Length: 353
Image 1: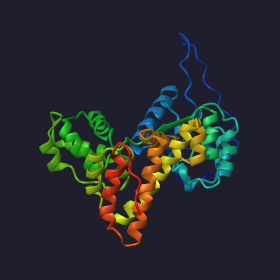
Image 2: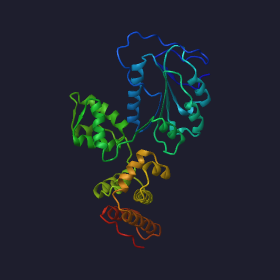
Image 3: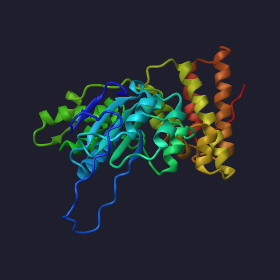
Image 4: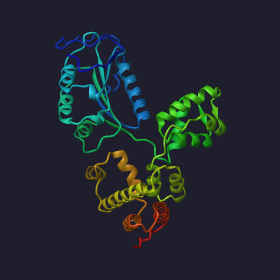
């Protein structure tokens, strides 16, 4: 019984249930030690562009071992776990190997059946890859793959790293982006590497020699992303005033909402700063805060820019400014500016009622 609609590539259709295993052909051309086998189970979490690149590398490794390996790709909401379990344990009829690619694994609401199915010994040359945007470190699915050393985490680039990341993406298409052109591409795509890859492919058509100037980028790159509040929160946490103000200008969001989000961000940084001072291991921090490892690392880099008393003072300032906005004592836009100036100075002042 098939588990759902999907695709089968590089081989004939999947076998029916209960088909006896097909013996591998004898090898008489052995000339040395075999390479390290490709892991049968892998969970890839993080940035969509980097995730697809990692998947392509894994598929290339699998096909290097077995060029006829079947590929079965499905979204998680198409999968019946009991049927998947049966199919994983059956042997293919027309190929020696199979590769099951399950997308949007962050949509799994009941991980226990998945853990049970994937925990059974798999037939030889059977591979399973789960893809997800984000999963909490406390997820039983993450713990299952971590116990097997099979989690690949590929975070999206931070705002500080976005320009270099965009240049790397462009370089993969044969483009050489000047620094000012990379800045335009990073800003207009919001640091989204998948969007940047699409824009780079377009630029390549207009720059056959591979060299892209700022003038060309400004004329051709389409704004593919609406600026969000997160760059402002991150620059605030990094205590970078000029970048905070630039990010604030780009955001089309209600100032009151931005202020509330900034206060929550500062509260999270203060809590992490406290855990750092108490010597709590990062893995335990991730569980306590319910954060994926890549996000925890990003927030910790910001929390470490504060002493504990500074983080507490910044949070206190934000709370007091928020209270003043809600009582009509100050405009939300003015409160945001006061918060940015206060948090990014060497010692954030305590707010005054």
